[in-house]
Figure 1: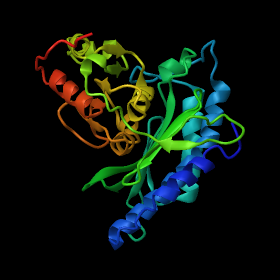
Figure 2: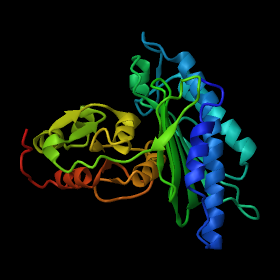
Figure 3: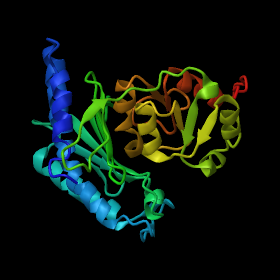
Figure 4: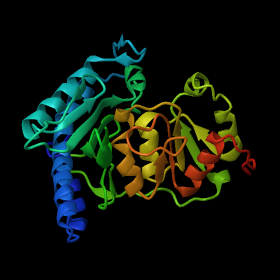
Length: 314
């Protein structure tokens, strides 16, 4: 990777969005704090992604099975350790929620930060272990408290093996970088969801077919196939990046954890899309997920609610 792999992209985004310039003092202060953390997160992600790529191989990567039945590798653990170390050094009062090492509560009392980081060092560990490049590093930045709830205010998703990244902050748009590995530096462009409303020409992605069966909703993929022109297993965070950048119209998952969700919520929203749980839940606590442009999301809402619908014309 080039040495300053995200600096050009974030400078472009900054030129078009100056957080907190709306005259509301409290809102401005929060926006500036979120912005500072997002800019730092872009820097923190670089060494984590470099470590991940050192362990990535087309021949596959050794893994262990955790108590919840999911795989974990030395790269998952090492990348999260890097992120935690950098966050604790720069933002010592912030909380951290991570897939591999649990929750570090934000400091309480005087100086309580009111911010937390939600980390998934490798979203898509199964593809990673099989030498498939459809995996990413997720960093979500939230503001709030355990008592009042948390809002997903900024997010970053890096696809290190593909050389892509998307990032967003509430009110500042979503940004796509498609050339992380180029020596002359990355260029950022606005990320926007697809404008297609014809479901017969639309694509919906999913992560695991077996996940629908485990949820007791094995009929959902069949109904998706009846409503959408294409159904593809472009999985995990990669599918949501495709939604945010307008390359597919919808994405669905039957099971999600906070670290799977937090970073993606502001990215999809700022790209002009909609992301909720199957029953309309919002924020990083949604237990499952549907995301898409307005038409794609609405179609998935109907499908997950058990409604019928016209078969897509092909």
